[in-house]
Image (cartoon, rainbow over all chains, first blue to last red):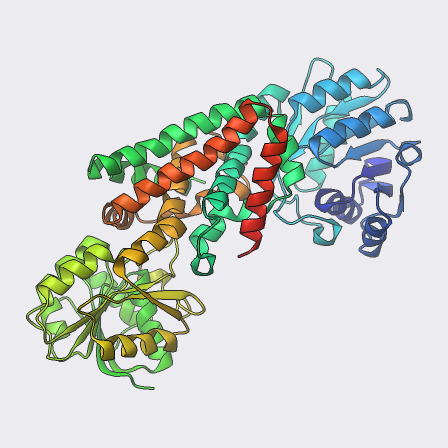
Length: 279
Length: 279
């Protein structure tokens, strides 16, 4: 199903590279063009056939493209959008793969002419690995993708983008940028902060003896710091609110221990098990 | 290498069942006897050949055994030890697989006659799964096992038990019960408390959209609540101390967010990555 003639993927890391592989596998475009700042990345993307061609020239790469996909840290996505705003063809659709949406959607909508359509997208798929060498054609399969709908969202474009992500095997949910950021703060950004703090608590531990529990609980703290800095700073209020809420939950365990309330402790352990088992 | 003639495993859950399979596979004993409170568990253990024979009668099961292994929640281990204290043959070695050691070692040493030898053991292997149906002959391979040495520990017995766990593929460390409890609080009990609090924070979340990050960070909160209640209550002081330390680390992230200290945020993210990547 050729949904687009020409697709440009800006940014060829884990997400951009995996998108190229997945789009080509699903046959969603006649031509996939990749863009990176580094020749080594371009060579890597070509070697795994994630793109048909690739260039260092962002502005030229989007000329004539029906779909432009921005994959980069959140603040870089916004900068790239501003850079290409004047080069997009009339009627082009631009999407992103950023992990926060409120800042991205408002800044990009303000920067774009009325003749091009932006649809905020967040494929909730990824890994603590990074780089085009970790690209995986099945990265998106079975996972959720949140699309954002704002006052300016173009109905036909969001419908087409919904089809696009579904063709890659994703389950699509549509919500406002605000609701998106609140949802993923709890499910993704708070867990990241928690994992980072646990790794940092263990700066002086003998980690040789760390077993599966420690490894799993801290795994995501290996994620790219620059990427996460942008996520945290563009979802600041929600994450602060959730950290406060989380610390209260942790304090319930601490208090039950301090006050020898073993029945309360058991209740908290049972509640957590039943929530986790429901996934 | 037959290290023992007759081994009795009391408790046939994930650990007891896996031990039976591993001992038989390594040929460490002439005979493995299993003990459970439930006939269904006995049937399950026999069906997977984790034991040569099994019984509901704890006291009879240990008569004539060279090695008795106690696998159960921490407080149950202590109760079982008291129950069998008078039935053990002279020179028998008793070990456990409990996740805390200070309480276990002091209570069991006080309950045992001088003619039998207790060696506190903590194989740091496990899973959020439980029950003999999850038993795995390779559960212990490559993982660490901590043995505790107290003033009363019998030198020959601890040397033999070291050989025993090593024959199952484990890397053995020897330390005091106090040092053990401090070490595992940070590496295992704190992560568990953290995972439990995260699951409980998300009681009202739409968990359909939870991705790998959330799942990994909360995985261990699916562990058996009764088992963890005993662990928490017998390592109370260390866990409280570590929760306090952890909340300070989490507050550093919160403060960096509140005060727009993005460079500090990046520093915390980078530090965590370097610690986690070192494992």
